[in-house]
Every structure is written in structure tokens, then in C-alpha cells.
Image 1: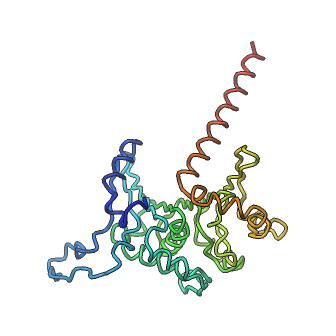
Image 2: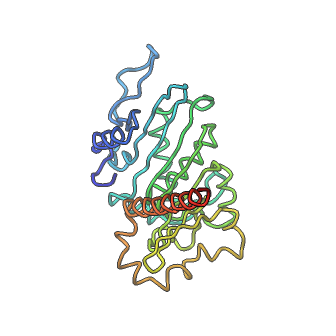
Length: 295
């Protein structure tokens, strides 16, 4: 996502990608130009169409849905990153405001963006309380922060949120106390993936991120990954792992030089694939050694 103004313009490409990977469900973005469907015969069919001038900004997600053979209704919301000038302005609204629903202070711009996504996607979701339906939320960059806010608010409203994934997302909570409150509304399986040469996850510097952290680190050309659990990060002695000063200032010139490449989702995928291949090779090598010893 992110190569066009609206995700709707990319749906055919996204459908092909899903089918090629064996995901046979459907993809949809709500059509804001049409009134919502209803079975109520007394409803006013002449409802006014949406006149939202920021339609391209609102069409910033897509919903994947699939009914599996065992009856499981799987729904996945994907939120794209910064694409439009309006998205940049959203990121710059970095004052932390108290949200009544979440009962904590969160990034004002991200929160407003999440509210728009929820308003648009809610009619497409199975109603809360359905015991065989699940919802997963994922996003990249701006979409990573928005994904966490969308997941937290949907969970608060009774939806069965099972997984949240934020790739290279910026910081969305005002401080550690706000994060503790916010994380109460996130599922156990909430993870953020961050590249140590990407500046975005350290912005705004005054904020903090939520969830467990998979930290992708390049050490003299060797790719490594460290899983930092949120409870470990909350310990005062371990908060260096989130420090802008310790993790960015010393290598700021390298970060700036490589920022565009480091922040791309394709870079994160390539790093993860390489780590997975190395892990598989190590497992196969260990298995071969054990087999030789047995013989």
C-alpha cells in the first residue's frame, strides 16, 4: 500500500497478492459515496451520499475477511502508512490529549485518524459478541500507531481482538503510566517490529510505544533480532532500550542517510526472511549433527 492516493485504487493488486499467497478470502474498502445497506423497508433510500472532501485520506485501510471450513470468521484490518499531505499533518498533531474511551493520554492526530477508520470499517465487521468471529489489526508507519488505537477501541467495545501488529510505527502514548492503562485494552499478542536504523519509532521523542518489541538490529553487517517483552521494558533499568538519546544520537548520520530505505516495509520483510532462513539453517544443521551422532 501507499503507492496511490486511495487504497481502493490498489484493491485488484492486493487481491492478486492474497490469492497468490493462498489467502482465498475477500477484500473490501467501504464505499463512502454510497448510503449504508439496510434491510429495513421503512428506511429512507434517498439518503445523502458522503460529501467528505478527504475521501482519499479516509480510504487508508482495507478489510480482509474469510469464513473457514470450521466456521471461524476471520477479519483482518490493514492500515497504510503516510501517503498524503493530510497524513503528514496528522503526524504533526503531536499533542497528547486525554481520550475518554481509553482513559489515558494519546497522540491527538493518530487518535483522530483511528476514529475515522473505526467509523468507516465498523459497518463491515461482524457485530461484537459473535463467539466465532475474530479481528486482527495491522499497520505500517502511521498505520502502525493507528492499528494499535483501532484495536484498543474495538476491544473496549466488545470485539474479539486476537492480534495486533505494528511495523515501524511511531509513539502514541504520552508516558509510561498512560501506556499501562492503554495496554489493558490490547490483546496479549500485540507486537511492534522496529529497525534500529529507522528514526520513526522514536518519534515523537516525548512519547512511548506500546506492546512487545521485536528489535531488528544490524551489528557490523550481521542481522540480529531481540524480543523485548513489554513487562521487561517497563522496568526502569531497562528503559534504555526506548531511549532516543542512547539509540539514535550516536548514529544519527547513518540513520538520516539510510532513513528512506530503513523505514520501508519491504526492508523489514527482507530482514525477517533472512533471519528465518538463518534460523532454519541452524536447526537443520543441528538435526544433521544429532543424526550423525546416533549413527
